[in-house]
Image (cartoon, rainbow, N blue to C red; front, side, top):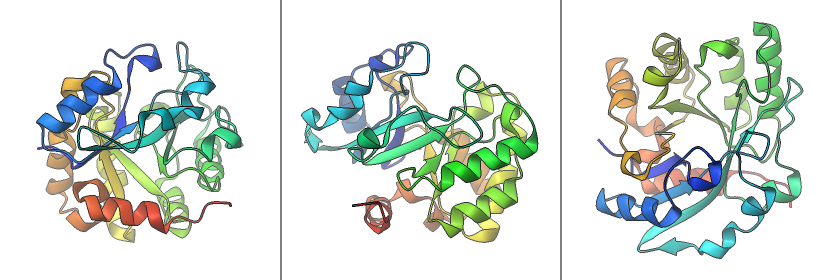
Length: 238
């Protein structure tokens, strides 16, 4: 199964990924997709993209080969105050901002610290979605954070790669998904693809979501209109 919009794709600019934007577009087109978010790692990730990469994404245009280009980033959360490695002047130029913890940028601490960190990130008006938060390294108070996300119109990512690539995620992601279902919090299902052939393929995540009866209408990137309605509903600073 393929998503309609890929919300999490890394190009060679991330330093440890292996495809270009054009290669991503080619596979999105091959798989019948409609949109592709370019979400390279922020500069504090070893090998991550330079800030100018995020300031100049408009050079790609709005659409390539019939695939809508969504200018984005996977920003690194740097601490438990919610600081990111992308300054506001660059965030305001982007269409889509994922915020994620990585141990190379912020060492894990306590459940309370992780919870406080995610809540502070949710309060950032430019952040759209919390990335791969089922990671065993950053266990948090799931219900508290999900309720805060709902309050501030933010999304939770269900990461297709997590169940095979991040210890503990196979057990924790269903817990997070069930709470999103309970509280009506929308999600996006991203591949976190680091190679173009893997974009859009969300079979593992969808098997989990279908297994818990997760409402399809809450999975925003399975429908082009739903996804762009969310983008248009956000209230960002002028």
